[in-house]
Image (tube, rainbow, N blue to C red; front, side):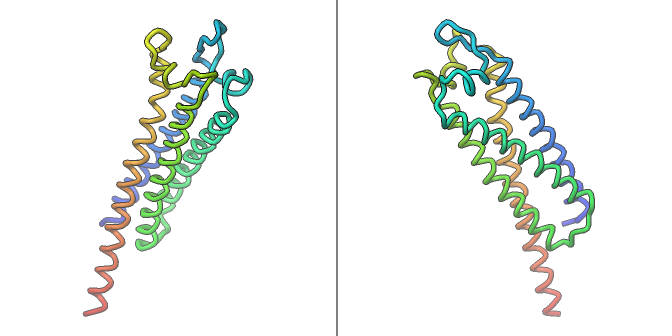
Length: 186
């Protein structure tokens, strides 16, 4: 594998990750504050339902905060990936291990984020499930549904990218090891 090609694609992926994560953070902020739901004939924004109204369970509040932390963690992770690819000071073997670890981190982080989204979507608001409320035909706003499903789209991108990074890192490690063993036999 060519080192320059790997570093170029690492930069491209890190920029894509930064953009996806920043848009996801903006999405969660706009989703929380702009989407209004009618509960008990009163209009609530999602941020008010979560933190102020007392309508949601305490674990949903924690899940929302953890989801924000995970999104911010992915932004920091993506920025550090870009810096590593830009500096180009890591040797090939370490870079291959780094790519494998990036893949594992993306897969584990993606599954954690998926579980937060699924648990948050299934938490109850005084016997109403947010997923059901957002998908009900009579109360659905198209923007709210699109914003909610964007979280799932981003997680899918991170999971697929994790598989790609892990596969490239593992393949490159095996090629380096094979090259070292063939050089030592000569």
